[in-house]
Image (cartoon, rainbow, N blue to C red; front, side, top):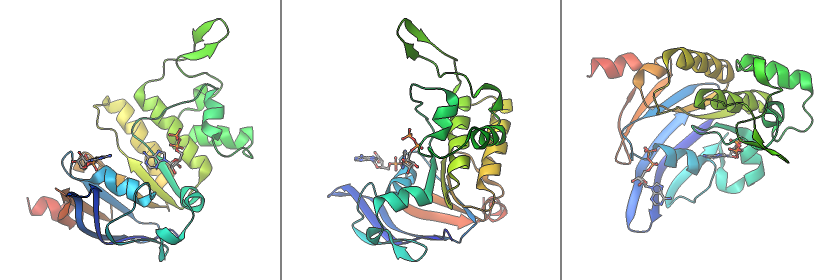
Length: 229
Ligand code: ADP
Ligand code: ADP
């Protein structure tokens, strides 16, 4: 469960400028594919198309062999978990932010997800800028901590497919290691598509796709790509 396929996908936001110019790849259930490439290459567009935020011009996108045009938005959203680069937290405790969309989750479930995402220490806390009757208060969460809230949310949601957008901004190496460990935990055994900004973070990917100007310029495992220079 969780196979994703793009078949000769062409896409344009505006009718006259094609952004994806025939993209084909397959992510077998449980495997990890990384998409790398320069800014503007079309990486985020691929993630938006998987959620069907836009319709493609031609080609096909399939999840478990089913064209996503034949699937409801609701079931797509429950099948795919997104860990975005920038996580917006709402005005409630970190625990409630983790529980987002899973109202049946118990406090124990939330705590376990938070531990795995390495934010167990502050689930009772409130996010930065939390508004009360008498003003604002709350924790100052760093970008990395917010991302770990999103990771905990995804661990709790346990979707078969995971879409990760790695941070572009330079995180300090300690934070980066913590996030990488949390991401490894959440992606284990799930179909994972990673939008990566550095090859060094996706050494273990089953396939790396190098996207340039809407086309796949190269593909292979980390070692193959390095040997080609
Ligand atoms: P990447 O994630 O690789 O940086 P994107 O997928 O965000 O690239 O963008 C690919 C191209 O599509 C860029 O040229 C960008 O300017 C353009 N683009 C992105 N979003 C939109 C939009 N909503 N409307 C029009 N063009 C867009
Ligand atoms: P929030 O909407 O607060 O950012 P989530 O990141 O959990 O919370 O998003 C809820 C759902 O909305 C995700 O599971 C995903 O289906 C979809 N979603 C949110 N942001 C994006 C995005 N940038 N690209 C694609 N889907 C997204």
